[in-house]
Each structure stands twice: as C-alpha cells, then as structure tokens.
Length: 464
Ligand code: ADQ
Image (tube, rainbow, N blue to C red; front, side, top):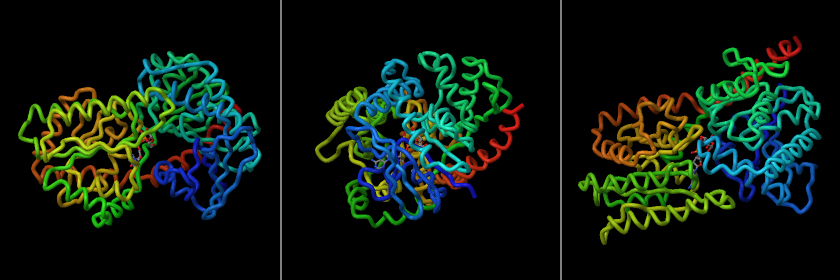
C-alpha cells in the first residue's frame, strides 16, 4: 500500500518534551502504522531557516520536522493563523487582525513546508494535510511537482461567503483549498459554506459535493472527527483508583460536580458559562452548597493579545462569582489553568454529574464526546452542549443550549441537576451509541477511502 504522509503544524513525536500526547495523535492513531511519515514544525525556533528535515523514527513511524525562525512564527502562527483565520472562522470578525506582512509570513512558512517535504516525498505517497495553518500548502506542494493524492482536513469551522469576504485574501485561500483533491470538514454546514464560497467568490462550478475550478475537480465533504471511545472509557474506569481523582471526589462531600474542560480560548464561551453558574445560584438557591463547578482550562496562545485579555476576565469573573456566593465551607467555582493527564481527565469526567460544553462556535468539540464515553452506564451524568459545536449535529440527546444565553445554560444546569435517573440513562445510552460508533478510527477510514476514490475520479475529469 502507498505510504501515508500526515502534515500538520506541530508534530507530536512520542515522548518529545512539550508535544501533546492527545489531540491529533490520538485521532490519527490508526494511521500511525510502520511506514507512515508525519511532517511539520518541530516546535523549536531557530536563528536560521533550514529546509532539511530532522528525522526521528519511533515505533516504525518517521517523524520529520523543521524549525522556524521567530519572525516566521510571528507572521505565520501568531499573526495570520491565530490572529486572522481563527477569529474569522469562529465568527469573531471584531477580533480579526489582518496584516499583509503576516499573510506573507504565512505563505512563506507554507512554502518552506512544501519545499522541505518535497525533498523526502516519494511519487506514490498519499499526503493528508491538517488544519488552517496549512491551507496554501497543497498548491505549493503541487508546484514542487507532486502529483499523488492530496487531502486536507479542517478541524475548525468554516464561514459563509458574506463573512469570508471580510478577509482581504479570501479568494486566494478558497482557490488554495481547491488545489487539494479532497477537503474534509467537521459538518455538512461547514462543507456547504466552503462550496458556496467557491461558487460565489471564485465562480467555480459546484455539483453536489464536487467543485470544479481551474480545469480540475475536487470534493468537499463532511467527515466528523471522533475519539477512541473504548480506550477513553477504560481510562475513566481505571482512574477510579487514581489518587487525584479520589481526592477530588472526596472533596465534594456528596455534592454534585459540574465540569468544564477547555483550552483557554475565547471561542469556548467561558465568561458566559461562569455567568450561567451565577444565574443558576441566583434563580435556584436550592442548589447553593449542593454543587461544585470545576473548570479546567489550560492557558493557550498567550502570545496573542486576546488570550491574555480572556485570562484577566476569567480571573475577575471567578472572584466575582465566588465572592458573591461562597460560604465559609463551600466555594461554587473551582478554576484551574493546569493541564491534566488524559487518564485523570477521564476520571474527573466520570465523577461529573454535568458536563458543561458551551463553546460559542467549535469545529467539533471532543470534550463532549469524551464526557459521554467516560460516564458510568448505570448512573450517568448529563451533557449540556452548545448548539454551535459541530458535535451538536450528532449528540442531539444532550441538553442543547444557546451558549450566548447564560440564563439558558443556567436552566439546563437546573434540569440536569434534577433529572431523574431513567431519563439520564436513556439520554446517555443514545449518546454513547453514537460516540462509540463515530470514532476516530471511523473518521480516518472514511477520509483515506474517500481520498483514494476521489483521486481516481478527479484525474480523468481534470484531463477532460
Ligand atoms: P480544540 O479547540 O483544542 O480542538 P477540543 O475538540 O475540545 O478543542 O479538543 C481539546 C482536547 O484537549 C480534548 O481532547 C481535551 O481532553 C484536551 N484537553 C482540554 N483541556 C485539557 C487539560 N486541562 N488537560 C489535558 N487535556 C486537555 C480543535 C477544534 C475542535 C475539534 C478538534 C479536533 O477547535 O472543534 O473538535 O480540533 O478536530
């Protein structure tokens, strides 16, 4: 079988310091068989650019990485990817900061990726590129003479043409996405928004999932990402004897645990969630002293101004909620910025009576699926889920809320805290059936199969 080459911004080399043990590496675990290559940024900043990839072999997988200079990093990662694309695609136009020099930096790093990978690529490789950092990469790899199957998956949402147009280089990026053979999105809505952009901004011809532009055809489809639900369930079960999980369970003194787990990001709706807890305690005083809300949110992207502002806001809100409602022996809101090992997280989800997942907009949101997988079947907790998370398309038996409305989240918390066991079990069984069916393995298989088929179909059409 042809070799699969995964390309992403960061490369999670096993046991490398600072590399995330979760995230993409877990989602793509099934592809990481001997012979596979994973290419991307090492996470290191160097004074000189170098296009020769450093190679590390681990369990038969080749990890190939390059370093970036700090100027590259600022323009590509901080400036364009996270300062312009991330807010735009999360519908936060007011937070989008577009600067031409950042876009130039973004193009330049994408070109470095393409040139560098070009030196180690074989003609019959299949290349699967991940996420918004690498949109122009496909076109640039084609310019390096690569003709093999070339796919792209966008982990975050997409925007409709009216919003996309606010980005001065929208047409270029849409055209770059058309250079891939297959582009996957988390939901059908995001895939449709992309096809609408291709039609409206480029004049491309759209037929069903196919987009024809510049004499070639590509397919844009929905391939919702999942988790390794069985492994997560086992982690959660084992974590019942984890010391830290036992300490947290003991500290509840019989009170219900509501839990939120998110990177500290303005897309996750954290201020509204904290506000919702205050509304719950105000409108339903019977829950005072009966519930603890634990919000775990490791800091992220602190180079970007908006993230530093969010941290200050959350610190302030935590003080306000606790100052107003705490009693000498009870604090409603516990807030930690520490990352936790996945196994401990799984154990904490398991003891949660409510999982609160209320992003303002999210590609999928894996925390929602992890919470469901971790719950005990005989006494499950209740998931509260934002209607604007991709996961809400599948997880319809959760309590679905508008995350911009703290009162609605508070009402859902009240319903969850008072929900009878039979209803909790019924909802959980329906949710678990989906989470255990639409797994990470199913996601990988769907994408790689579609990529194999699409290439076979797009070549003759393009030649026509
Ligand atoms: P993220 O925005 O990072 O991912 P999410 O899908 O929730 O959001 O994934 C976060 C992951 O980080 C989860 O697996 C979670 O367990 C883990 N995590 C969160 N807090 C943690 C902590 N304190 N310690 C340890 N681990 C923690 C992007 C998109 C999403 C999309 C994913 C995958 O924004 O919409 O679902 O990619 O495609």
